[in-house]
Length: 483
Image (cartoon, rainbow, N blue to C red; front, side):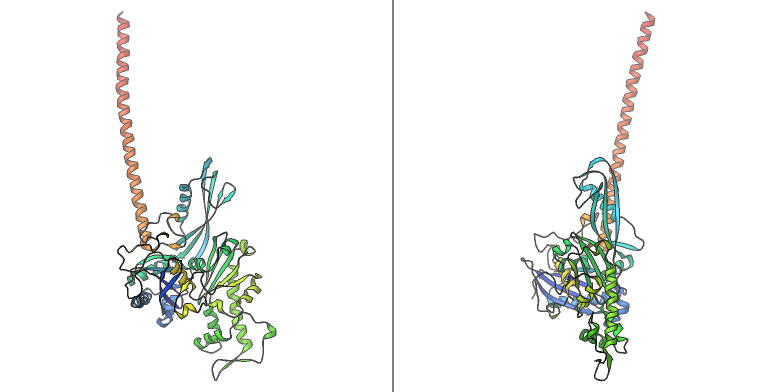
């Protein structure tokens, strides 16, 4: 029987939904207790989840319920809440700048910085939802600073990288868990959880590009000086290669097998045998050259699109190189293909996460990059997900900061980097902001009423004094006249 302390994470992928439960140890390692997968392709994938985005709420909710039931059976413990990875094709990043003019030689305070953050958070994008914000450098007069607090200036400029998703997709994701009756402890941006799990501090600091090649999407994350500089999702993945191979008049299942067996992202022309035939099955064959051209053609398109997502300012500053991960990164010679297109020699394939993982699961122990994201989400979990906890919010380690699932969100500083507010949390935050506004207005009215009362008293006092002075003056005149 599993222990009563465990984390549960769920990843909604294009081809499958994965649920995982694990127990964190005091030394930082993680024991995986259960892994469950539900193939969305078996349930009309085109209408459930496409390119990591939920399209059919009810069927997705059914899959989620099945995942929870299977995990519960393996854990022999009811699950109170789960961590959820947010990804998909509609996620993108956009830069935004907020400026505050100040009196000369004003010292920057933390409240000023939070005010800039809140102003940025309130920026409206048509049909888009701000999921998270990655603060960049602050411009203090003419100087760039990571932390401007305590510096004197007359102009403070905050530069932010806002991570957006279409509101419809964001609401659909929330609705799935509401429909399934599953409590969400915290939503987390899957690409950021993945980056924290496979990238080294040196790579993030010196500058790198993380390219996660999934089934239907390819995610590009660019880091420099330990700051996320760009996040983009391309609607192309390894399944596009499979579909292209299937155009050679074969089933996708056979095309997938051929891709795994013969596929290469790069082949030297001198090594191509024009007479070689590749077997589809016992009766059918396909020309080797034609197969190579199809695979390389689509792979080249994926690489070119991924490279195009890296801002020009960072293309020649990726001292940490390019890090490849995901199932698509397992293709033979993929590192050579990236070198040929990007002319960056430093290519690393991240087959596994940086954490110590103890597991008997074959998919995890295969270390092929396909479980990296879900393991990254598991590592982000801090709140016990077992339902028999008295408070249901106990942090597993006292040294960590609990991600309070019921916290209000009024500023960027109130959230963990990468954490995405659920709709319920957003409603709570808006309600809290409304209450604070009403309280401030009430206090302002009371102060105004008190000031008005004070002014009235002063008017009365002045009136009495003036009357007394005028009486004395008049009396003085009468006495003088009489004399």
